[in-house]
Image (cartoon, rainbow, N blue to C red; front, side):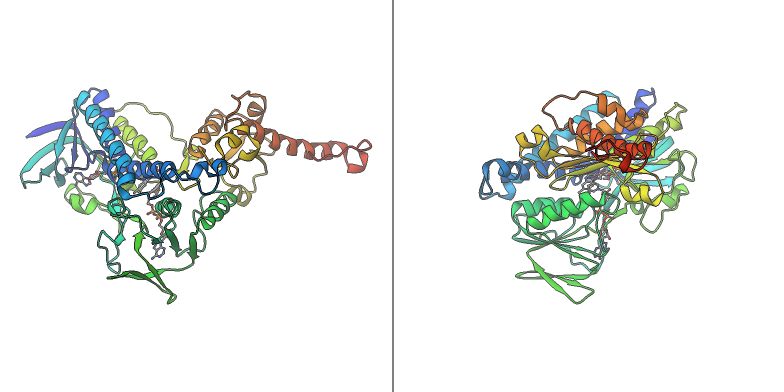
Length: 483
Ligand SMILES: Cc1cc2nc3c(=O)[nH]c(=O)nc-3n(C[C@H](O)[C@H](O)[C@H](O)COP(=O)(O)OP(=O)(O)OC[C@H]3O[C@@H](n4cnc5c(N)ncnc54)[C@H](O)[C@@H]3O)c2cc1C
Ligand SMILES: NC(=O)c1ccc[n+]([C@@H]2O[C@H](COP(=O)([O-])OP(=O)(O)OC[C@H]3O[C@@H](n4cnc5c(N)ncnc54)[C@H](O)[C@@H]3O)[C@@H](O)[C@H]2O)c1
């Protein structure tokens, strides 16, 4: 029987990094993955195909060029699924190759099949022909991820009523679409289909969406999406989804009925621990199939770690990778730095994209933290004009007394890239003054940091002047304390 220092189950971002980290520490590592799923949900049905599809949509629709060339500008007038799939397939197969080579050159043993625990130190791997292999390990890293939640009241058929795995297999761009759930997945796909010209209705049971983001930016996103024909129905819950020969009907608890060509059901995900017989290893999953871990990603069974989406929030590819590396290092006694959860960036690839790091205005207000806001609007940056982005903005939240950066919120082109400048300043404990004094390349969007920083310090100075000069009546003739 094969025996390894560590056996990793699942080859998504969490599993890959756990296995590679072990190999780099000189350990014998194995990774188990099902056929055709190398790279996990991330590469095959999640992050990478959806982000590539978004690029294809932006390119083919010419959406980002319309401010410059007019509203009727399109690169291609009749965009087909084949046009869109070409780019996605190319990127996915390239990424799978990269992962295969990385694992192979680091001598990580690959087992293809479905893993099941048969004891705390042993799994079986069943391949497509039903053959069973027994594999033992000193340590295990469970990185099996999630699948879309599929309530029995929804009649999925993979063609007209689909989840986020199946949406990539649609055979045409629907003329109308209902998106159930205004979570990150729902909003990203609603943006893409609205950009393609589908008439999109988003149904969300909560009164608002993306509550963890900056309110002003979410409002701007909603405005942009509505402008592209998206209808939002907040505070509405879906009761059932029916399929009929001529289309679908989404029936809401309120009695409303919404017809559409296609329904995307994107209302959460479920851990896939059920197929792993975790009980045989002494583990218990919660009602959503998730495993509980401590701060080192160790489960209640000492030599078994769990990482990535299977442990729940924040359930991102970026965090999953880091958890995988940390779990392995912990298992083999390799020191790791401290995780700073406050610096976890979030990037939402809606159209337009939004991204942030740190705290929101609402959170700071609730915590009675005095802060000032500095804003740079893309339309006032030369780069914004060059790329035709007049709606984007960069917002900095600055501690009113300590002058440290408490939050960075970006909306518009390259928001998810831009946010890392602020993340670095925050991570190194920098103040707003660093950004005021720094010189940025021109014309860039990054220059927005300086503009927003100056905006914040101007406001802070105005307050200081009122304070130090007493009443505004003490100011010199014609002098205003305000910027
Ligand atoms: C549509 C969509 C878009 C997303 N976009 C983003 C984004 O833009 N940015 C971002 O950071 N995150 C994004 N995410 C989230 C991201 O994809 C996940 O956080 C990430 O894939 C989780 O990685 P993981 O390693 O935990 O598991 P996964 O990527 O889910 O991989 C788990 C793997 O384990 C395998 N497995 C399961 N059970 C077994 C078993 N018994 N035996 C063998 N193998 C098994 C599965 O086949 C699968 O391949 C998106 C997700 C979705 C669905
Ligand atoms: N850019 C990114 O980082 C990115 C992109 C996509 C997905 N993801 C990750 O994937 C995970 C899953 O995303 P998701 O959007 O599926 O889940 P989610 O749980 O974030 O959102 C689901 C939404 O559906 C709503 N909902 C649930 N049942 C409903 C019903 N019956 N009727 C109407 N609304 C209903 C919920 O209130 C919720 O707002 C998230 O954890 C996210 O982090 C990340």
